[in-house]
Length: 258
Ligand code: 13P
Picture 1: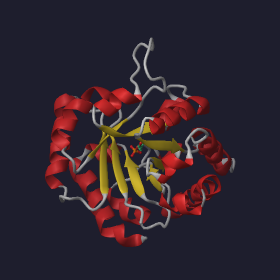
Picture 2 (picture 1 turned 180 degrees about the vertical axis):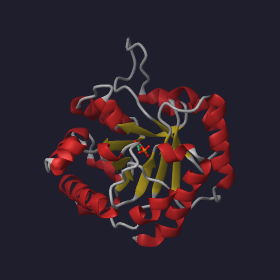
Picture 3 (picture 1 turned 60 degrees about the horizontal axis):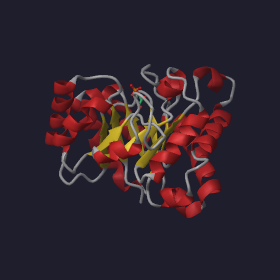
């Protein structure tokens, strides 16, 4: 059974006090132990502060990392440094990093490799732009991003549960335009097929594929009811404790799907 992973990507939002406050509210409202996996992904500089309030019921995630182990890379942070901080999951290939910060498929592949090699969980983000979708390029783009992102991610990492894929159509991120459950499922099924090709049926069936893009309390249950949607990666709605908890509750109610 694939346990849902509900993760809140706080992006470059919330100061230190707000981050601690949100984490505290989430912890207070979560059932303990929580039957689904929950992660919060604050900005790097507030990881430590958030870690102190979340305890073991919520996993700490990081939005970014550099692929080298150490050295003269001013401004960068290594996977080992994140591990020291108590981080369990690290995003790679988020569309904002691809499109705003200029990260290439090759860089994403190197980051993915570094994350799993150092034993942390990789959330590899993939997704097409609106223009690519309108030109029927979704499968081509997502396929290419998967090939490059997973080029150096060995089967052993996938088997040990260190690999999560997040399908985030760029046109749905922060726009209020959610993919319909059927649109999302279609791409998730394609991603599952790619994972079967690369890692084999059994391993692929255990890899979680999250959906992200204007996910919220009101649409969470319908998205999570899809056979290949195994969690949500949430931006805007994860900044509001009640919304985020509502999404977690929808996941708990839907969990016995598989
Ligand atoms: P929104 O939920 O704000 O659309 O953001 C999704 C996202 O990018 C999560 O990583």
